Length: 397
Image 1 (tube, rainbow, N blue to C red):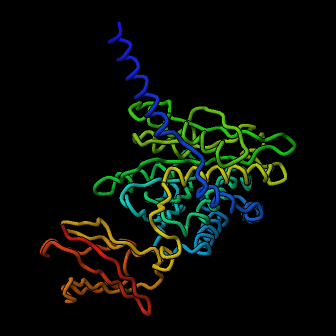
Image 2 (cartoon, one colour):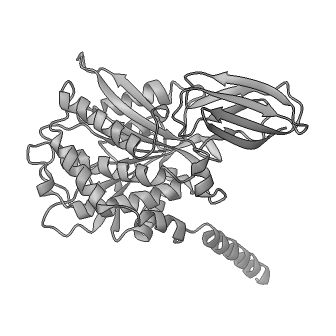
Image 3 (cartoon, helix red, strand yellow):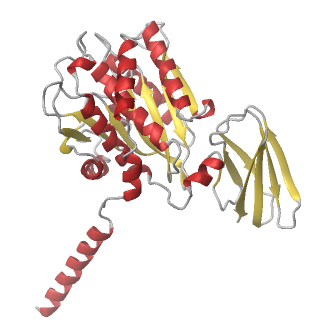
């Protein structure tokens, strides 16, 4: 009997200890970034998005919205090297649609991605709620995470074609996610769609969506992440959270590909979606502001703010990074936010001898050098671009 009680106590203690050590708690560093969320930015961006008109395939408005999005990211400090235009056609139409993908490379897990996405196309009207509200929330997340290091890489994706059956996200998953060798490693897909609330109502709850569909192998992970999302809502916004299920938005293209998903959707659901009255006047912009705060805190939690790096030095080095470090063979060069198209790389050993010199012209965001023939040890890698010089220590193991 006493042995049974002892075993019970040990099991209880281990479960309690694990729950305490892995529980989510308020993070003051995250809150400091969340508190920089701007309600005026939200309102301005909603107003500008609405003014762009009906954003359907083949329309000038859709192309103008795409350009507007690109200019927003550029104004936040992202570079053209960090952007990919994913063009496609669908349903027998010759109209070219585009997805916009903006990638920020992580410091510890550069090849594993947290994706935050939402569609920017509309049907029946300007789509200010469905899905301008999601678009501006993602833009505010991107603005505030641009200058902070995160352990996991982040992709900010604006899809077109959602209103025509998830065409943009389906194209992206089939041609890019599955077309990458090895296949793209996605930690989590966080979808934001229709989070504008209803004018004149008390909009104090956001619906958090988990995967309950087949295939079911990632449903448990989706449930875990969605419960973490709910906790983040409570920690970093004044909103309540309601647990529900995912359906009929771009995350389902990822869900059917067996990726882990979660999402935000308004709890007070608009009656104006897909009509000419889906306008700012029928929404609650303060609700969108609170949703954006919740999304910022959640993305900091999912991508993990890297507190080992000083934000000032991270910015002064233009977010340039080298990985993996230590390395056994290939070293990847993350161009960071360098604007110049060309740069050179020098590898210097501990005796001060330059053992490698290589130039990259029209450099991609990630370039690679082969170090498999180099002796094990510590080296300095020096990246030079115009008048900029970044020096970091690497280990060849």
